[in-house]
Amino acid sequence: MAKLSVNICGILFPNPVMSAAGPTSRDGAMCQAAARGGAGGIVTKTVSVKPADVPRPCMAEIKGGFLNAELWSELPREQWLEREYKLAKETGLPVMVSLGYTADQIAELAPLVKPYADALELSTHYVGNDISPIVGALRAAKAAVDIPVFMKMSPHPNIQEIAKAVETAGADGLVMINSFGPCMAIDVDSGLPLMGSREGYGWLSGSAIKPLAVRCVYDAAKVVKIPIIGVGGIASGRDAAEMFMAGASAVQVCTAGILKGPGVYGRISEELEAFLESHGYADVAEIKGLTHRRMAEGALRTIPDALADALGDVPAVDQERCNLCGLCETSCVYQAISSSGHLVIDAGKCFRCGLCVTRCPKEALTLPGRD
Ligand SMILES: Cc1cc2nc3c(=O)[nH]c(=O)nc-3n(C[C@H](O)[C@H](O)[C@H](O)COP(=O)(O)O)c2cc1C
Image: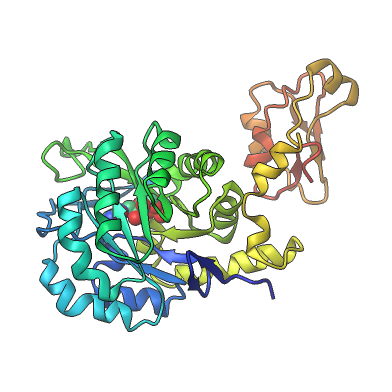
């Protein structure tokens, strides 16, 4: 069996799939449900000095993604300190306590939650893209506690700059990314925004943001040495593997936990294990940063057109797998694909864009050099 346990900053996670800060950890009972569902660690819902006044509606599934306007915990911190953190701790899993947002607020909250926390996760969600308040919040936490402090990053445009600054200021790890926004969706029957927030704004999560999250982790991993926990759109073992390859040391899951229920953590973890085994890896650590290594080897081929033509370098078709469903043919804007009993790709017309390979539901097409 492939090894899934990971040790991050001296904290042992039995598997690398945690429940992220959100409604799936909105109180102690939900943290316990996540543990029963197979999570390898728990991140509690972000708590700040005052309970959040959460607008309603505050969650919606949209095509390809998810919108929320949930802010932070609507429960008072006293309730977390008296009851919810203890229930989270009873899971026996590592508990990362999420706190927000300013240096003053963190300085006030961090000493109070320390007895229940294996680590702190600080949210920068409502702080903006300026480095100084983010670093200020981190310094306040580091001064207040001696447990590892992780900085949860929003998808900042200057992600490398902030990641580096936070590492230099003493962060023990990074968690990225928070949901992306502000975004907006409108219910066309009523003409009203789907979210009940004052401006109608919401924040995007789920599969729509996975490529953004993967890119942020990939870019941050280039400039920092501290561990990165990847979050954003993970719903399967292959998604988790992708995040590891970008440089993550573990992953968190929020939207898939909402949409599919708490059993999703265990399923993702099992799928990750099956993926590792089927690809000959003995330990999840072996795929951490794999894409950085492959790119450094020059493994990404960018063959000039003339050479590609000479090689007839078009996607290979496994005719046995192909069921002639027509998806690739319909969406081939270069009109290079045709079928008459079997699939044919015209090397003279094929632009090598790669779209057909990603659309094939039968995995019957393979890009040259990638099988
Ligand atoms: C409804 C909802 C509430 C969330 N609340 C928090 C929160 O309190 N603190 C936080 O740091 N992130 C919060 N997040 C962000 C998630 O932890 C996560 O970073 C983001 O949704 C991307 O991961 P996902 O695509 O797996 O959901 C929330 C996300 C959603 C969808």
